[in-house]
Image (cartoon, rainbow, N blue to C red):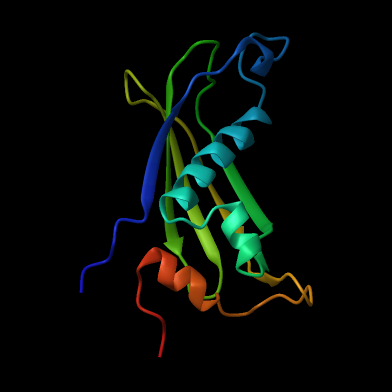
Length: 141
């Protein structure tokens, strides 16, 4: 059985209010661009934040890493690719941000989210079945 495509790519264009005093995108706004890509990815599988809540789980980010390679600028179109690379015990999403025209790498990152039962606030050590179903992957035995 081949692995399903668990990725999504969006385009973002930094706006004036994303710039710092040096006229480059402020480092904290890259996190916003990752969030936009993560939302598009999860929506692709009909498991965005509203569906997560309806299924009885919260999925807080417990770890994040960003590697800045180049600065982004006002009006520069960026492609942000998000891909689910782990889903058994945690949800790990890898990101790659590139210049839309040249393909030059701007940033790479990853986030880790864990399932938390909304009623008990207890962390799950195995991802719930609903995630497996939405992603179309086979659950562990």
